[in-house]
Image (cartoon, rainbow, N blue to C red; front, side, top):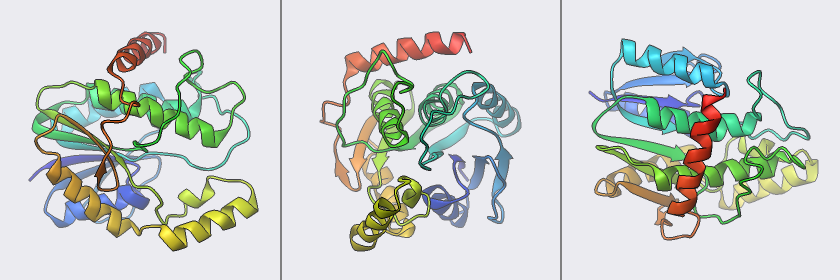
Length: 257
């Protein structure tokens, strides 16, 4: 029996993967704001936009369950917002939840040998990173802030090195979930997105099957990135120099939180 930790496991892809791993006889720990409804899943409630909560949940898991065999990062808030939300620790919410939490959990949890980290983000898309405004506070736009957090995750994966742990970035593209349809505030854009999802979108079960295949395919690679089933690790978004730069900034930031 393997032990899997899933963030954002109460809906969408995270819940779909939780169902899969429970059905195959594994222990599944789900960290989320609210308790879910999957029988036999272990629910731990936490606000992962807070650094302190990440540290608390790591200590809890390691004290109670020990090292884990897989970390699946799905926690995301896609709801459209006009203004930046600042956490009580003074960080922009999207940056804190969708990058910083993933950095902390990836680097501080204890893993068994031959483990994996699956980071569900959007590798395979290029956009520049502004290292002078990593939190994307200036001229805030929630869609662009989400995209910026995903580019930071590209560098997180590219720079990640832990013996016995492989890192996989995965882009599910268009998925038919209610969360994905909340990205835009404009009603016309929401209608457009609904049509797109109807035409080319994938059901959660399809994405779960794709991820299971990707996890098998990537077993021999310490780092890999996929857009659906297509490898995209050769793109320039996975820049090792920028990955080192980001890690240095992140470590300094965490010292001051």
